[in-house]
Image 1 (cartoon, helix red, strand yellow):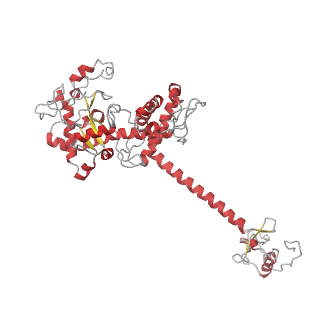
Image 2: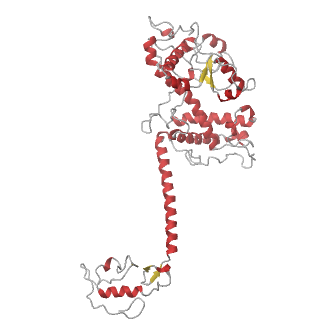
Image 3: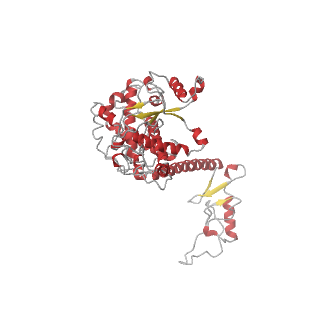
Length: 474
């Protein structure tokens, strides 16, 4: 037979290996040769070869001169039977490329797993797919990409987030204030839509883990911060839905969308969503605190269970700044709050760091309903540890700050200040909102529905007034 180099080779006198099935001779040639570690091994078919076969392998090795070139320390045989030297430098480069690709693949897999986990948290709220031609609310849009109906509109170099980060909104331009108002409305609607808590009368479900969320939509965790993974996942979805809604009505919003100092981005809507979250969180936690005091309330005062009265929109708001920034500066407001709290002459640098919450009492609410909230709050507050109570923001309820703005849905009749209702029911500002007021009969145990023997002061008659309204009410 002839060698692979074309020269005559020694005839192999040993009997040919035969297949046990078809008894056909099998040609045994090397499919790969490695110096040192694979010496003498020519493939699966060559195990147990005889001495002449070893001579053939040695002859093949001699075809490549490795004495002067360290780059040829590893060889392989091509399909045609010729030796092909492999440069170790090229092999190293190949290994580096494979390593880089593996690393990129692992990074992508980690990102996909995170997306899947996030999607599972709010899978119930994904809802129907958008119609053809609509922007998908779930697509990974660039959070800094500016949407503008007019592609030729000129934008200035201001920060897109300035309309939410500016401390005093009066420093914003007319178009910026309009943009902020429209975006806040879109985000608030999207927040309720995505979570499935569509009205203020619907309670917010409590989140405890990814597996036991019972809400109708995506999970929201009011017990956590804006950085909690559940909330971050929700914020991005809310921002995407709000953007989708704003785009659908872009013709209506074109004047502020095209304004030079307004830049509508997903990032802007995410920041506004954080503010909306905090706005919902405060009354949620407040109502949660009051509900925790109900057992002790019933034990102390008896009467009917006030659970259905503990609704955030019927409670007092709490302001963290002055009512009119032009009439009173932040520092002057803080100084007035400090004086209400019994601290006079506090240095300005200390006041700058102080935080206060000023109770805003609703004029529409009766003293009877206010008394119930006052009792619940006192029971809850008295149950706090000294450390926790001292850590709370100082709450000022003696400033007599108030509001005429009615809640989004009517209270029970006993909860209405009848004098206020008589005065404002025909007012142009409120008459539409007050159309159904006075039509909701009192629940058992309250107002006109008080049973005989009801403890005094829990609720009053249908007029809803009690002498001496509490100063520190809910």
